[in-house]
Length: 115
Length: 112
Image 1 (cartoon, rainbow over the protein chains, first blue to last red):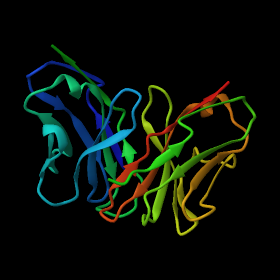
Image 2 (image 1 turned 60 degrees about the vertical axis):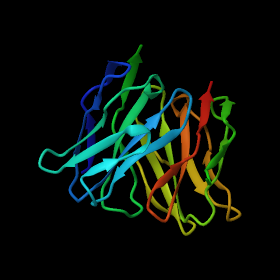
Image 3 (image 1 turned 45 degrees about the vertical axis):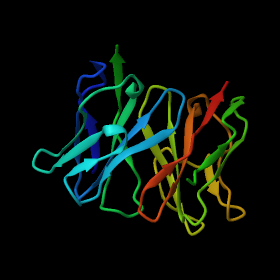
């Protein structure tokens, strides 16, 4: 079975400091992994995805994530937080590379950014 | 950039009533999905749809739910007799050629 665990339900950072949102996954297959962001009262926007190419994946708005198979982790980072980064972030696994499989969401991490 | 659209943005209905949530996926996409997010909870898969058939459905997707693509463009989710616990944000998704799932903005369903 596939699952995703987001290790922090809330993360609070100061503007200009680094962001780290942690995610561990479990998958029987070589998975595809994603990070989505949801701003208040908005839909879900894809930040980045890993599909077996480079293990360090760069996304939009300065975010990146590193796939570490040995640690079954896919943590999301950003060197310098901006006020506009405040949102809910979801780590997502799809059971196999590519394909049309359903997405399995983590519980989400709410990121707060303080001035 | 093409996008998935959903109507209505907010639907309020009484318990026991039927509702139809509508979606217009991105043209030339072939796979479609519905997900839902109960307030404060994680996003959950409901159903996937391909070639006018359900490909996979979750335990949530019981006999009260149905999907169809009546005219080759719209993709609908019907709930026959709504329950209080059906209150949630419902997201329509279509799958692109790069296997990227494009989410619509969602329909907030409130059952009273």
